[in-house]
Image 1 (cartoon, rainbow, N blue to C red):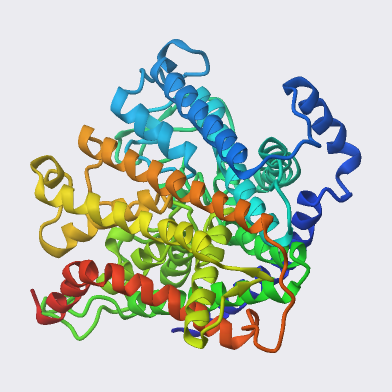
Image 2 (cartoon, rainbow, N blue to C red):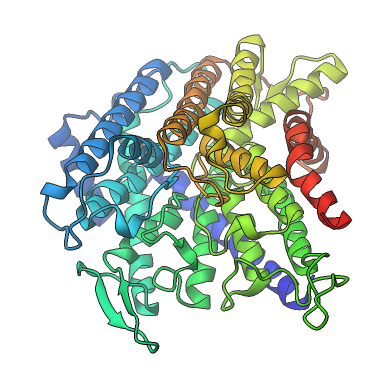
Length: 572
């Protein structure tokens, strides 16, 4: 790694740790119902919302009611967003005259934004109107992120409470996540983006004449407002097809840094919130430390692989293969960011369930692309998305203490709660559902005629393109490896299934775990209790996460990016 890359990574980690501590304390107060500095302004607004909607904030829900409320809200969101796209051609705020979105694409997009995936099988600036961007996609960026935070808070309550029948009120958690957390930060962040040159208007596309005399159409619209929540809510869906590689979305080094920080802000803050709410801050910092260790390994590897470049790159003078690509692999990267900032951004966005990109992942080296793919495949627990990262990580923590308990012949405990067969059944279901969706749908795509029409590259790279698409969909990440024609009935439908399953088939068992743990009595720690803080547990947890991923996905990796790397080294 270059000195610049090392310095950039060190400064980023330092800023992230400080942000996690500050935001974690605020999140703990918000979801514990404690007073915050924002109460004089936001508390009256919250009470008005409850009066208008008929929500009783004092009435808490058992996990079954909590899950039903979430599923009903998500179903309504899918239907509303689908309908908005299907009739957008007849609605106002459509200066470009965009027509109605086709049914298969409207379904895929509605599912994508409702599940916080933000997979985009279309050109945003040429497909959806300003009204759809604002009232549809941006609104879902807020509420889908808030729903993820609510699930994480419910699971933390399950660990923090004892002999309780309820895990909170979904409508209260959803409201507080939007009103106290997402809206204020997104508002300020959007203003900062505008000051840096991110576009924010309601204008129609503008035609200009280039220096060679060609006419070019430049799209514009409400970009900054969507950009802010797209990052802070780890959504990732851009206003432009080029996403954060586009100068209207990410024009300066400052916006690039802010986007990278805001992607990890809430996932990192939730770890500190977790420690405070369970009454043991060390628990939260242990989670943060494991996440950070896994992230740092990925960031270093990706940067090194990209800085090494293509070993078969032709020499600029005699066109024969050189020992290495001079300066590293700049293909698919913006010159204003370079290799180190592009590699760091790519590692961050795949370690979180955020589909934002400032470089094209399809153009990364085979091993660089493998790191990005594996970041998603491990379950997006390397910080992960807002809420999704923490609740996915805590599931792995329960698996780790169960394995540790088997080793010493003792009933496993986590945060004073015994992890028994009922909880392990739900934990196992949660861990298996995403790999089943990824590998099952990838296999179907690679043996069917319609599926094989998607990848634009042959051989192992084409396999990686398909595998990445379903990994991104089921992992609710949303970033695309590119090189895949996903705007078809086949991929729109199967990716929609992957996104729905990856979101809700995980959430229901997790809420069941929360309800089961909340009802348990807290067990006092003894000399035989396995410690769940410190290096020993952190190492065990890292090992469990990596081993589960390796056992599940290594055969697919071997046929895709690993074979491609070996072929590249051999000159094929």
